[in-house]
Length: 177
Image (cartoon, rainbow, N blue to C red):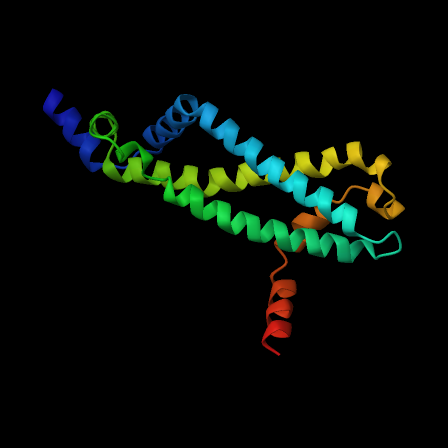
């Protein structure tokens, strides 16, 4: 009976085990995830702060948001590569590799859980950091003379600009021309 249970674990993909692996990954490495969130938040806040400093008071808000969104897109691209490069971190040392491979899950479940943490986990972290950074800008704005239209929430505009592929295609077309 034990042999049948072990074979079932080896041969079938289970969303329950995948969920347990994701929960284990987050609970074991919560400090690392928190530090990454703080690093991305700090990067976005510094970029937004400098964007507010260099923007002219009569400059269009859409231009400031576009510049900020371009830099955020670049930062997200670089940081996502770092996240993906750390995907197989549990296989780094012999002891951690043995512990990771001894988890009661299939290799596919282990790989998918790490892939989800590196992709979906990154985007959740980046969106949360961006939301905090755009909310934190209200701390600095009274000390600078910025366009009063920037006092309105800009998180939605930045997200729309990041995920508006037609805008990005237009930018690529302009660069090629």
